[in-house]
Amino acid sequence: MGAAEGKIGAATTTTMITDLVRQVGGDRVEVTGLMGPGVDPHLYRASQGDVSALQGADVVFYNGLFLEGQMGDILQKIGQRTPTVQVTEDILEEDLLESPQYEGQFDPHVWFDATLWRTTVDPIVAQLSELDPDGAEYFEQRGEEYKQQIDELHSFVREEISSIPEEQRVLVTAHDAFNYFGRQYGMEVRGLQGISTEAEAGSRDVQELADFLAENEIKAIFVESSVPPRNIEAVQAAAQDRGWDLEIGGQLYSDAGGDDGTEAETYIGMFRENIETITEALR
Image (cartoon, rainbow, N blue to C red; front, side):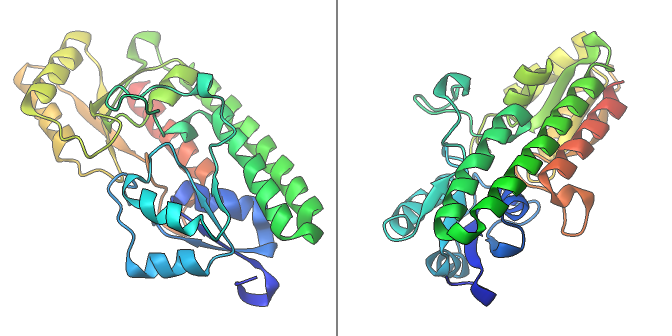
């Protein structure tokens, strides 16, 4: 094993996966996360240091579904000699949403449906147990405890969303990161940019969205921690030109969690903070 004190050395891509592996692996795994808070995985390119971290790891965990689009070749190469696990591999294809932008691909933002994110636990338990058979029972137990926490999160989200008046259950953000969330928790979701932030929003997109918001008297729209706010600010200004006073309801975590040491550093913490921000602005 490559990590200190005989621990498994795991390299992970997004902050959500870094947290997931820490939750399951506990003190038997040393996790190196490549992408920090506020980092956009769609545009992320691996540094030389990242390549070294991947090469030195005992196992690599990534999201897949083309979320880490720029890292595809590197992950494929590393996978030829190091166990490389797509944590979303157990999600049934029928539960995935097709990408409206990219034919034959799926929307990768599965973590905002807690019932889907729950399925990412087992591939991690299985791979860690294979690398450290003595820890198999430990990983299994931690995995089951974490699934229970995700179930509690799911119940919390459903309850909170039900407190928003039905006509205000419209979530407008910088890019299409919340479609699974909308489907699972009963909200209409609109993103200014598409599923990948590589697609730039044009002035027509801004104007059309401003029309919709003003006509439907939607109270608030949201910026994202991993996407520059300028496009959402343009929508706000365009709605104001139409005589509708639209608020920016706060910042949501979409493709990355919060700063180290904050509540939103963890997946459950970032999700709860998002829900509190959304309900406060729309309720």
